Amino acid sequence: MSNSNFINPEYFYLLIFSLAFTIWYFIKKDSFDAKLMFSDTNAFTKTKTVRLYLRHLPMLLKIIASIFLIIAIARPQSSTNWEESTSEGIDIILSMDISGSMLAEDLKPNRLEASKNVAMNFISKRINDRVGLVIFSGESFTQCPLTTDHTVLINLFKDVKSGMVEDGTAIGMGLATAVNRLKDSNAKSKIIILLTDGVNNKGVIAPFTAAEIAKEFGIRVYTIGVGTEGFAPYPFQTPFGVQYQDVEVKIDENTLQDIASVTDGKYFRATNNNKLKEIYKDIDKLEKSKIEVTEFHKRSEEFTDYAFISLFCLVLSFFLKTTYLRQVP
Image 1 (cartoon, rainbow, N blue to C red):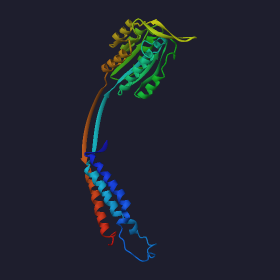
Image 2: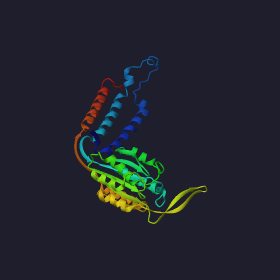
Image 3: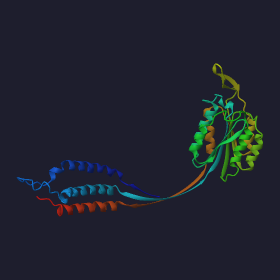
Image 4: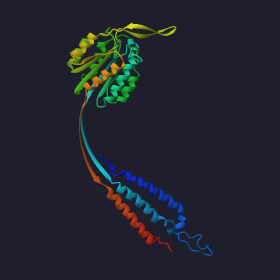
């Protein structure tokens, strides 16, 4: 890649004087013309030669010369860069519970929206990794396959809402679908971040069975249990509007711990928004892509070309002023 920069760019402020002089010259140009007094000008009214049109050319050449001289003293340099980068990326599948219980408001504005916001922020920082999204409740499906186009992924993430599929909590299915998306990956590291707020009560695949399958494919699973301790406010729609009722928080922490343990991952518990943010920060630190960059820079001076053009314009201006465009007196 080749580009140019200037060692002394502050000299470009001198261009203001060139501009000001140009404006002043063309305002005052009539006063610079040579004048002879004649009693009758009829003989000259229709006589317009090439010299007449070119009479200001020497001054224009001087102005151009000053501009190129300023560019020259600003010291332009060309820079040729070679950059070799090696990135060993990580493939990540986010498997997120979207069951009705995720609407509980112990996290703000609720568990689902809080989880989405933190996850989207996590995605935006994983610029060298492929990331995908699986959602589950009573069943599971892939919302977005592995991709490096994080803008598309985040837009699809924004569309996720509770009620997209049959209600329930099929943790095993959510994990199995995520494993299916990663099993053929050649990435140096393959991870699943599984987030849920409940107990497995749906699906044909048991959570531990899905975890053993993940282990066979070398996939590490980080599990997150979302929900406060004790009871959480849950919104219910009634004929009189939305009313809240405290519902007991039930998270199968033993199952989530087993999934993380068998896959060499880690289990986290998010009881509030800040804790959830800290969990994703911890995972971000645990799973870093390896990037090796080698750079080489070669610079060369380019001011001589601009200086030569400036000198050429000055010489040409002097030549025209003293020969073809000479004025009398």
